[in-house]
Length: 331
Image 1 (cartoon, rainbow, N blue to C red):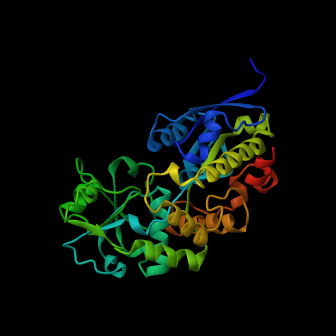
Image 2: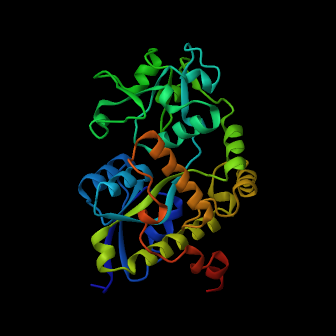
Image 3: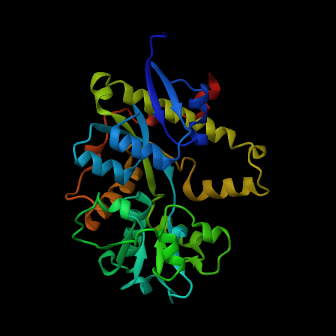
């Protein structure tokens, strides 16, 4: 025994976590066992239903609903996954969808809970004039039990044996909001297309208007651990922050990524999103991000009351206290 508190951590195999996983960065007082052999759906489900891990990456919407139901979890403001979502809305090319407003009155596939879908429903409503209560949302049967009553949304179940992608391709749906790219799109099926063919342009407009690079996932921690060892949260945030800064420094080397115009792409991102687009902590930028999603969740009926950002997170020092890459280089 090395005297450290041993914790299991289930999360995606992200480059921003690599230094912590490999031990280049140490979490003070903690011995972290990373479990990365699962897909995100599996580890989120296992943490959600049985709290199988001490620490786990979790979708924001899933975590918020669990907390409001009294689940023995808290969270730290470490956001391992962000993504713009305009490029994840797909249409049946025969459905006559030429603009977002054409979705009004149509059937649109998309499971209710994923943060990706809650974000995009809110964005379509707030920025493109597609009220979520004027669309019929079709979700998969296995999710329906978690949402027996959604007073603000019209919801139908997909027929047994049919995936939402199947329904989009055969004309049962006019469109589909999906957290991932459909297989048919990747295979060049001409029955499916992007709602926003110029999705990057739309995402840039959205970011410049709102300042939001949408947060998808946070890091959840068992409540019993935080109650017994309240120092754990600050030490975890510090370790994740240092690991992220290591990743940023690796990316300064264009040889690490096999892309011909990689340096141009990295510099473009920095010009637009700033030097730390995956910022942690509860600063004003991240609060606006989270408050927007919580507002969408409330309006869509995913939660019964508006919850504050501070209710969702355990106390921890802000990551700015831990220094940036220049501090590491002086060691």
